[in-house]
Image (cartoon, rainbow, N blue to C red; front, side, top):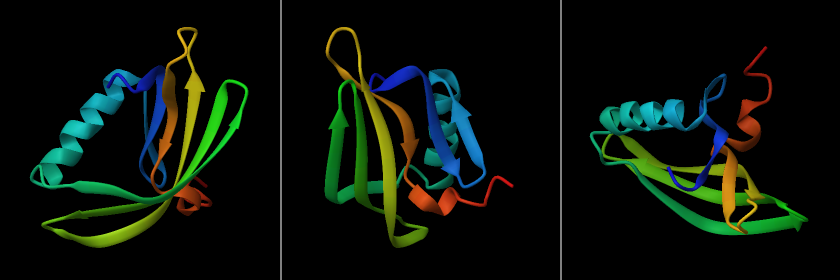
Length: 104
């Protein structure tokens, strides 16, 4: 949880988010249980666009688990540099543009 800002957002699935470290931790416990602690995540390409204290990370994220085939996601992440210079994730969106239209 140390990689997240206090008010970070995790896209659980399109249309569902967890906001804040406590809610993100709870979501991770549920996600881990759903995948029987077998979820694997791998980055297969990444581009980082940095401006000042903000970085947009675009990634080809591959996920798989015993009950999920290998799936490529075009993920989007936002990181912000803290006062101590550490990069922290403020938006964790492994679904990328798939979230468009899902919140309506």
